[in-house]
Figure 1 (cartoon, one colour):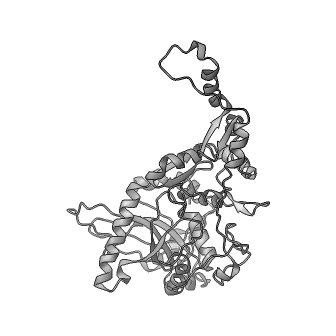
Figure 2 (tube, rainbow, N blue to C red; figure 1 turned 180 degrees about the vertical axis):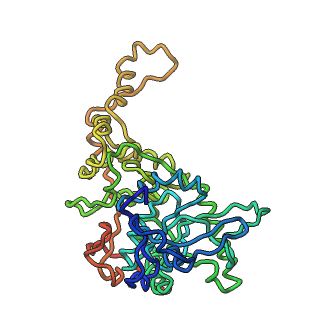
Figure 3 (tube, rainbow, N blue to C red; figure 1 turned 45 degrees about the vertical axis):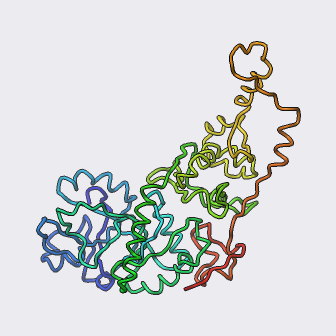
Length: 411
């Protein structure tokens, strides 16, 4: 309450919140009002005695008048001194459970963005959290001191406990084995939690999924750009093309694998207003980094100038003389190209063993640009292939009903 005098802690269960005889905890509430452990548990749900390690867990609703990050900055050191920790839940559900985890997910993905996207698709209140994948059906809090095995992490989808089957059916339309188009372009698969896998034969397949997730998390390469002034427009659409920056970049295919996206994920960096992180396969690192380094000339020269407003004036100034070469998929500048022209023009002063550089014939650049047109296969979705609960009022701008055709087979 000292960090936010206007904060309140209501009763955790809706039944108790509707009871007018149970007041909210606030800075104005006398401490003597909470006169028993039973009364305290109405606010700190599932509170129990400390375990052997001296830890106790509970769930609490904390209504703040300031952003959560700002609140935590104020109470961080005080809570540490009192051996107290506070973690936000992935979803606002009284009784939430893990629905599934997402195979091929990465830590770099924006959890809040993905949670909003999946909630818009299903019409349910969903949360997404990066945490270890459980490999047993028992309690996971007590770890064997002799167990040195490394935990495998993945993004988990959380929903209300009474909506598990319904939500899983909805998400399977996008993330089952037959899906070839994915909501934001990132290929992921919906893997059931360990306790819901009943067959011994399928448990071995579950282990294989864990191995794939572990290898991908360790081997996936990443690149970052700091040239943007804001990273809040990744899903904003260009009115003239109805395409977002995210869609345009995810539609780029590697030269040697034209059936997959060059980038695996594109997300804003956690707690940053201008940094964006791209992940990609290590074999495509050179190609991916060329696009990341040449974002401004690529967007400008390929007809996507609408998104230049995302970049800082300094970055745009640096790229005034840069241009994108669609044939080599690299960015160059007039100054760089002059290097070769210097060598070709000054052959009389070439006293080295280096061969004389050949000057490009007149009109070469114009002819090269005309012959090297690059088209992008940007998939969209038609209303017929969208879940019935999707509508024009979705809060995530990437998902409106103006879509191209894609076949999705529900399971």
